[in-house]
Image (cartoon, rainbow, N blue to C red):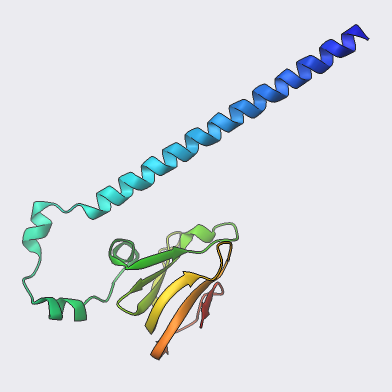
Amino acid sequence: MKKLKYLIVIIIVCVLVFVGIEFFRNKENQTQNDNNISNDVNNNTTETDSETENKTTEPEENQSKNTEIKNGEELLEKAEKTLVARGWAGASNNIIGLKDGIIYYYNKGTGEFRKLATGIEDIYYKTEDSEEITAKQGEKTEKFGETPTFLIYE
């Protein structure tokens, strides 16, 4: 009976140690991910002097009309709003971005990039846990090509 008590105490201590190690490992990974995200944001928002010198001096009206995005990296940098698909393995590779009423689709895994529609007012998740991204259509919405299954027009 005495040996059984010692065995139970040893098992409980081992379980507590294991849970503690996993908790701190997850906390460390979360902190590292947060640091990586903030570093990426800082790197994407800073401009070098040569980039500033190379910019054209067009009036702001002309610049806003010619703001169509050409690739996925530009989408991540310049979009007014980006949402990441969620709910299945590999979903985080799928990004929907909104810039000047145009929504774009970018798949980071394959590099696929394309314009989905114009005349869009906003993109959002309907609920906090929603796996679908909703695009709110304006008066003159025009859709191009095939729509991803996780995108809904409203």
